[in-house]
Structure formats: C-alpha cells, structure tokens
Image (cartoon, rainbow, N blue to C red; front, side, top):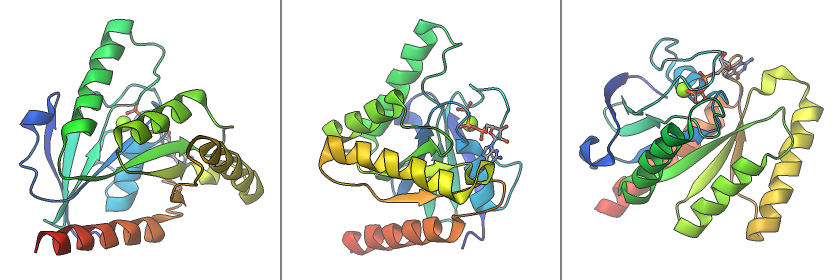
Length: 202
Ligand code: GTP
Ligand code: MG
C-alpha cells in the first residue's frame, strides 16, 4: 500500500540525486507509453507526475519518495523521433549514466505498450540492460485499450522475443493507469524487493 508519496527533486545528473540510502525503482520506456501516468495510478494522485498526450513530456530524472521508505523514479522516454539528435543523445547519456551508476537501483521497470507487437527499440533497450547486468521487469501498459485476448497475444509475442535474446522470460506485470488493473501484483513485487533490500543491509 502506498500511504504517502511526495515529489523530491528533478535532476539531469545522477550525482545530484537524493543520497542512495533507500531502495529505488525507475520507470523507463518509449515516450508516451504511460510512465508518468503509472506513477500517478500507483500513488492515487493524478497530479503527482506530469503527463501529456504529447510525447516528450518528462525530460528529467524525477524522484518521488514513497512511504518514507523507497524511491520511485520517473524518467524521460526513449525513441521520441521529434527531438533533435543532440537532445536525444543528451537524454540517452543522462539516462544511461543514471542506470549504470545508481547504486540503490533495485530494478528498472521497462514499460511496454500492450497494444503493439514487439518494438525493436524496446528489445534493444532490454538487451542493453542485460549487457550492463541491470535487473529489469516488464510492465505492459494501457491494457484497457483492447480486449484481454489481444493484450495476452501481444504479451506472449514480447516474452517470446525475450526468450530469443536471453533464453529466459523476464518477470512482467500487465497494467492500466486508467482502470488500476495490475496495481496490486506490481506493488507486491516492490514490497518484496524493498524488504529484501533492507534485510540484506542488516
Ligand atoms: P513521456 O514523459 O513523454 O516519456 O511519456 P510518458 O511515458 O510519461 O506517458 P504519459 O504518462 O504522459 O502518458 C501518455 C498518454 O497516454 C497520456 O495521454 C495518458 O493519458 C495516456 N495513458 C497513459 N497510460 C494509460 C492507460 O493505462 N490507459 C489509457 N487509456 N491511456 C493511458
Ligand atoms: Mg512522462
């Protein structure tokens, strides 16, 4: 259960992020996939993270403190064609530095649009996470946009593509920021990981 959620700080530099003394979960994925909307759905606060119908809304590393116990991080999206190459590479460097160096990062939550067939850019990103040994889970978003069968088929295709890459299927959750679908299982995952993090520090 999320009882308290507060915005802490926005950064371009991982070195200026809050002291890495609590477990942290970061949301990443293509622009417009629903990262900021998911932050709001999980925290029951429509206005906590800024969302937009236009891709490219989130441009910084945004830290939210949850239950005074762990951090949720809303990141800018990747693969936003309309920004210039130089802005794109600045974002990429900011995000990859953060992901590689952030020592309290427990898992990267890679958001995938459940309406689509596997997208090359998402597969490339998780391949990179694998190479960097950055743990990740998949969050399929916008499950309200189509029937369960279609969502299930797209999830299956993505997991098959993961199996091709890793010889294994990642952990995954199916969610909707609109209906709240998938909230409990995902928060349970986080609660377990948070407990494990603090247990391992004892
Ligand atoms: P950037 O910050 O630009 O990278 O985008 P983002 O991934 O944070 O996406 P954002 O949360 O701003 O949502 C983009 C659009 O998708 C908005 O119009 C949201 O209302 C819509 N959206 C997000 N999640 C859902 C969902 O689960 N269901 C539906 N129907 N719409 C959603
Ligand atoms: Mg956003």
